[in-house]
Image 1 (cartoon, rainbow, N blue to C red):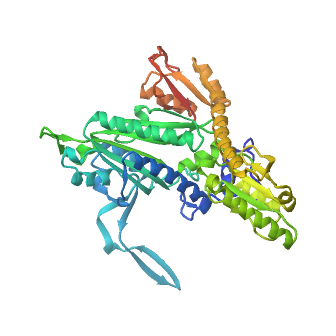
Image 2: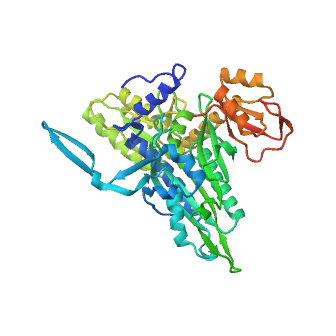
Image 3: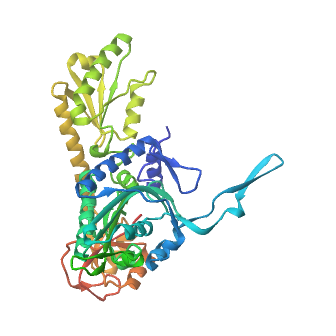
Length: 492
């Protein structure tokens, strides 16, 4: 196994090295696409399971919609097509024509199979879903309609990085329809809060919630809200979004309902989603120079036991005790893996489980069995302690809770130490030429000013923190009046 580059030397290389060392994903033969390996997909399954349960608790149901969307659908909502036009992959033919020359085969689209209407590989599903909603919604009795789908999407990205930005990725996308604007806004904010809850309670990743600026809104939305997290290199990562779509898609696809007063009204809509980008966020928020660090609540393997022995007699003794321990730990840790691979040194196994981020490793040898104890190694702080086998389930349960809590506290402390309140352009440029971080600054709200800041410094407004108080001030860049501070950062 190759060494992992230190974060201090090359953060981008470190990130890719951690993914490789933990066997999370790798590049596919198609540029910009990735193969998610079992270890990485297990994290996605944990994310999926937790969020899916929460969505259903709130009344949402799952459905599935086609991967291919008629090109004309995308053109029905003007802002939407403008926002995604440069990222779309298009299907033009239905079959290939092969030829063989000099023993070599070549293929090309069969000209006789050209489609009358080309198809878009979904970059997002608003258009295909709202076409269906036009058939499903007739009356106020059909509302609210709360749909979610787990799917893959494709956006033809120019600059790609595993998990963070790939041409094809996995996500969930919620799509809801409501009778009033107030209900739609409540849904938008409710799902934003779900994402905040998940990021902080399960990924141990503190986030800042708030609306995006008009320049950064989702194509076709009235308002876009995001959760923004700070990574270890002080850059921001947008980890989830929730959109109030107003009546834009309802009007584009003529989705009306009959009210209780027997009038016809357009419905009000939302959409919201998170993706496999969350795995990238998790890596960059918690991992270290030894490899992956996983919060226990999203680790499918929370505990691994590494038995240590030299003879068959010791092997029988240690493995027998390891199986007893694994069974005892099920209520607090779920399935406990026993690494009983032969002809592999314990030290190599220790390193492998460190690279893969398993929260707790138990080392068990014949002397430990005789002393009724085990060595417990905690991944997040790389500490080892000797603990009694009596009450081990309680000890492990408490330790898992402590790991989860300390990961969040460490990430929150890092964010607080690297968040600044700035008043002048000189302070702003000095900060972002050096260590960077989050900054709260006044901004005039004008798109031209926002663009000039990004062009000059590569710093963007991440969002306008929710529930922040009004405060009179002057724009950090142009000096025009401002009523509120916004969150600035360099971002992925």
